Amino acid sequence: MSLSYTAPVSQEGLASPRRYLAVALLLLAVVLVVLDGAIANVALPSIALSLQAEADNTVWVVSAYQLAVLVAILHVGRSARFTAPGGSS
View 1: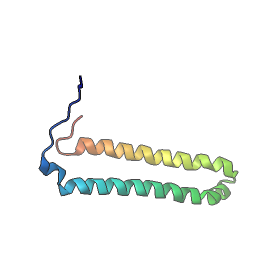
View 2: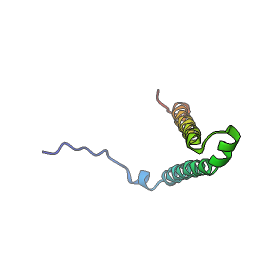
View 3: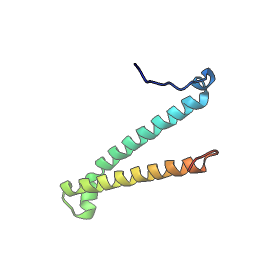
View 4: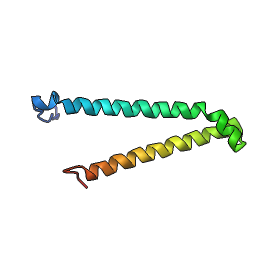
């Protein structure tokens, strides 16, 4: 016996242009985050010189930077959910 349930989906929702716009914006955000991490990794030698640190220790700087970007993205997404029309708490 199978206990699966699929929610009904209207055909007009599948072809909505807003749906494709949302996917495109999501993909753009992923590309920008990856590009930002690559730029930070390229800047590691300059960071090491300015902080007078070894190259091994500067990896922590990039990790902390990417963690801060992640927290900011999560915070903005969560606050957008509350400020959107019909947002839930």
